[in-house]
Length: 394
Image (tube, rainbow, N blue to C red; front, side, top):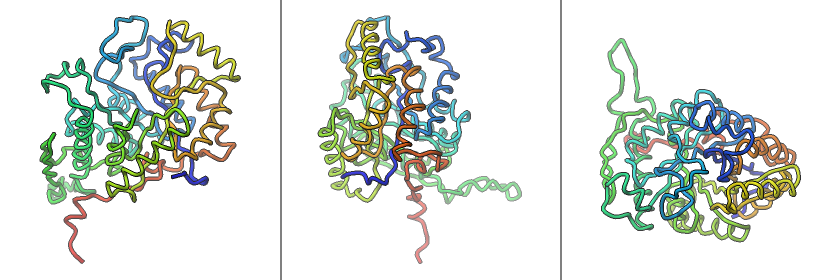
């Protein structure tokens, strides 16, 4: 399903450590001594907001970063450790005004009740700019941090559990109706108890009664995103997400992924609900393609390894990247999540060179047109499911 030519291109950045490349922290301007400070993250988000980006995605995980898919590596020449994504987003929220703030959560090892109130709190603190990025993990060494199970779940069951997790979270966000807080000092009534609802969710993985302890978020439903590195997560995107992040290497793969997800969305009876599909790219940007390639080679040499990553990798100029993004939208993408290879270098290249080039092509906004993340993405504010259920018959 091609995106209409008149539709705006949505653009976001992924923020993780000093950048996607393992040697990024050793580059000039990388600020390695500040990676675990609020000021560092506030500065990055301020740069992204100056570039009018839709949102920043704070990456996260429940184990130390590793170059080995099977467990921890012993390398000491790479960034290890992260701050909590949702807490970091909440810390920088008061320092920003319009940009969306999306924190990653591993649903496999967290309780939906806790996540619902954490993201609802972020939405209140940011006045409607919160998002939740849902990810799963079946890694045995991660399981051992928690001791909740004797063995990891299979891939299909991981995604089934994540779908239940999101459903519980969404119901809890709706468990307070709008206007449930009366705050009437004269009568002594702070809440209207009739506008708080038990969700009574009973599923294979969770049993949650509710209601939440946090009033309904300003957006009603903060934005939910899901990433798919392969087709295993397509069903979760189709059933549970507002944004699907698709890892595809070229236009043909992208078109096939878009078609598959849209088909699953329709099969689930949700075709009428809006769903953004974003592509992902790791970017090495410079004034010339040769300079970008030279910088990438120098970083690889510093890391003693050739960078491949788990996304497609773009190496070139801002103009060439803008051309690629324009072409790829024909495959059905409505936006892109860009991963700066070196945040100190490539984030400003995105905001100060790629964005102006997209604006010249009439593809990107020249000012923020909404105050909420749902508004920036063109998503309406959902009705409260429980208010609809209790509305008097006409």
